Image 1 (cartoon, rainbow, N blue to C red):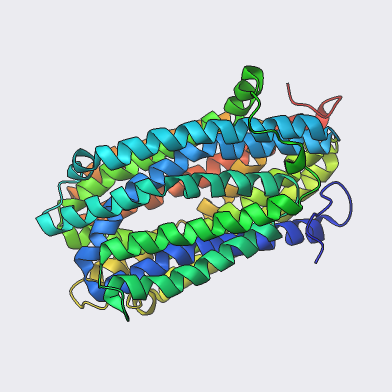
Image 2: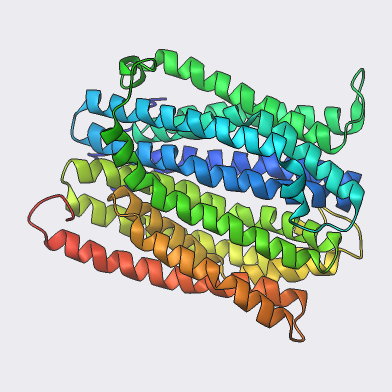
Length: 454
């Protein structure tokens, strides 16, 4: 299979499909990483799921931080490649890696040395759950290098129109995780049963394997990586350009993660079981949003390269195609979550007393899936144009509104379901505002005299 896809020419649906399907497949595989952990840990106990759910909030936060070098680098590299400037693209890629290395050191220090106060924030009810959460956070904190670098390299390969490399690398990592999880969680053969710690070790080892696969691909690349000289200084002006694209997206993700932690703390008021339900439910729901995020990544690269080449009409047709496809996907996932919640949730936690809470979560969040997919796709298109501020602003406001809504609605007869409704309502609002704003921006862009937005 030809790995690099020409995003500037050819049938738009075919180009988007060739780029997006491997990325979406990668998103599904990344989702399967977490689901594999949840399925095996669910066999251990709902407390184990709650522990990983609490610690996992900080991994989500780290992923938001990693968005700065990943998204900023991806967009700027794609702009440069679209304009035919390979040396400039290599400068952006080098700077992204340098930024990422600094962030890796900071996150590793904080997660390994400050694990106790970080986990205590959630006010979990059982000390055994707290201890498991701390152990999980320490282990994945030590392996933070692989998580960050895999994201940055994913952005670089996507910017080149080479999404198949990411798909292959992540697939190998998933296979390793599927094998390692039961072995290390329950203990098979010479390996002792390590429970939550085993799940963390399996995840880190799988990510290390993915990084190794990326390194093999880097050695074979003749477009970008052979021009990167990591041990030479990267210019501050390049850091600034990357930050202008990546920081707004990262801020949105970080705020979203932080607000989710506050909501998790509210959820803990209904017991550790409610935390486990939220963790499992969000993993199931990720079938929808990770697919949309994967497609948005493809739209981002498509728009960015065509923006660099000044092909405005192609950007319009590409966005229209993407929006239609994601609307169909969002509708499909809504139907699944609303009408088949019991079957899906029981795959992860079979405890009968937990099931009703899980069913309510999936049905309530199922209402907003169409809108969430449209928001994510439109945000990717905004970022591809180098204009991340508007979707960031809408995302921050919409996510912040969840806290007062959650407090108000949970104080009514809805109880815990009021928190789920606060999430769903805000997703619907963002799914209306962001697409409408992008359509208005796109019209202004198309009326411009050149290929740039002022």
